[in-house]
Image (cartoon, rainbow, N blue to C red):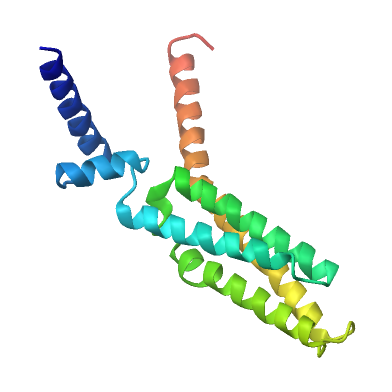
Length: 177
């Protein structure tokens, strides 16, 4: 009897999960999305790949000798990490952040690797304009990641504003405010 109740409960959880996710699919697909926090396997893979790329970028930062460039690289990676964490919480926004995954995240380690290679080769003089360009580019990347992160929460902020205003109107209408 206990097994049957457990089986019914599991089926109910899967059914509720399918409704909550608003998607059709096999039980295995639904269980996978539920275990990944409501995201599709493709979304989970996208996040894992970006996370791995950022980990690799973080390791490269330690090879950068120029302190200013190193600090800007750390800042850009930190902002990218924040955006990635926000997207883990809001997987439905992954598609909107497509450029982040397709271009920005993969380009970051390329830039860092090339900069480290030039530094190690000894061809990059301390006054080389490429140092300033790289630093400025990393600063711009950090700003872009920050702005993308802010944009993820604009809809929620608008929803909250509407909810608060609706509650205030209801309180006034009821004579409670």
